[in-house]
Length: 79
Image (cartoon, rainbow, N blue to C red; front, side, top):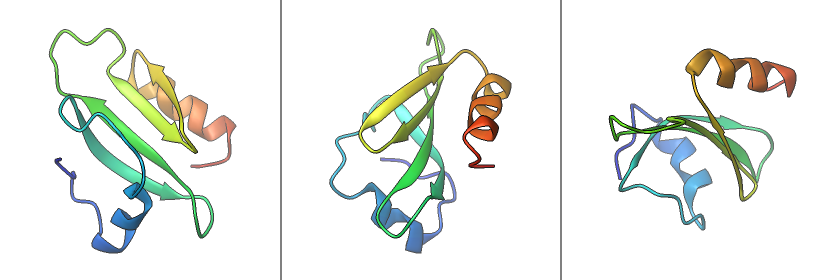
């Protein structure tokens, strides 16, 4: 698993999730409350169809671009 400069105190949010760490790099963790965080991931494969991913509470949303992903997160009030 690669963690893209993730603060050690935020890594606890990843425990218990079976994320695809072989193909995705965790870019950011956005805490939402004491137990849950939105996890921003980027696909390391150069031919990825939708390389950006937001994982939250066991569900994943995939995006074509970082801009599209940020628009989604703004709509949710996460950024």
